[in-house]
Length: 91
Image (cartoon, one colour):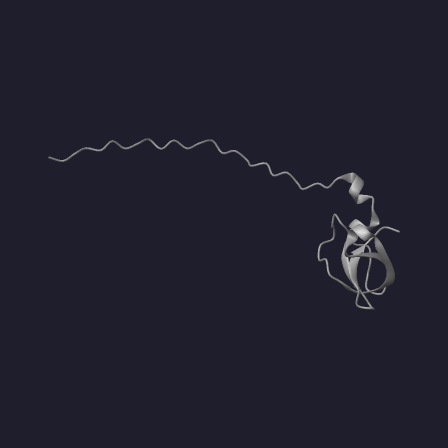
């Protein structure tokens, strides 16, 4: 004897569009120049060197930009011509 299997009715669920929220940054942090990449190689900038708590500031010319993003919350990391690496701080 053959067993009869009932076919389950496959009801299609209504299509719902997924809502993706755009990543938004706080307006307060965008006001600081150091968070948005405005500097190029050869510009004179002031950077802060590790350990950041000590607050040692050095002025120099940018040799290389190490942060690849356009926006960075703590400031872009750069290398100066003298070889010192640090984060750009607002002047």
